[in-house]
Amino acid sequence: MQVHNVNLPITVTGRHVEVTAAMREYAQKKVEGLHLDYPRIIEAKVILDVQPHRQQVAEIILFCANHIVIEVDTTSEDIYAAIDESISKIARRMRKFKTRMLKSHRPRKGSIKLLQEHVYHETALESEEDHIEPAYVHKEQYKVRPLYTDEAMLDMAMSGKSFVVFHNQKTHKLAILFRRDDGEYGLIEPEDTVANGTSA
Image (tube, rainbow, N blue to C red; front, top):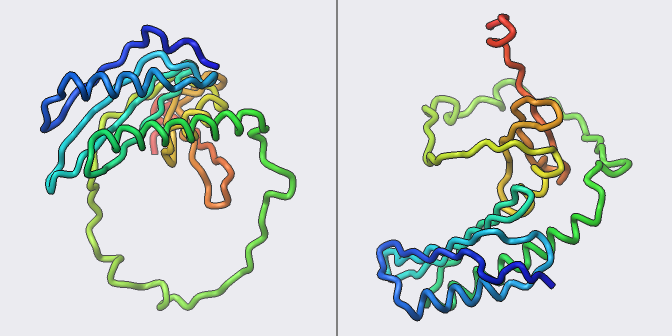
């Protein structure tokens, strides 16, 4: 059982809502009650928000050892229920993560699947969507951290994200770890052509 949650730094803040003493105490006690032996929690942040139509949101971010960050959020009509569900999500994710830790991250034998070949006429590949101008719909700050590949896998499993960008501690290169459609992991290490003096 994890005992490191004693005197754990927990920050409770509000968006569009004033955090009462009761709300702060409830959130802190719930986070302190996460008695799990892995990963070790170093710091926790709880963000409470009230959205349009009085939807209550509880977002919890745990900063853990081994560069692991766990983020969950829940929307409910009651802020206390949202906190409870977010705590449950974190507990389930941490237990699932610990189970995966006991297994090897190496690809399983026979994991390469043969796909049936299909031939399409060129007109079947044309659509009106080809003429739509691309645009991004979300922008956020992304911190690139130094990690080993196994640590990046753990980070992605805990955060629930579909990819992780990191500095590979083994190769000392920028790397992108992503989850493939078959459930396995893929790793991309871009070539630094500018540094090598071979710009395209």
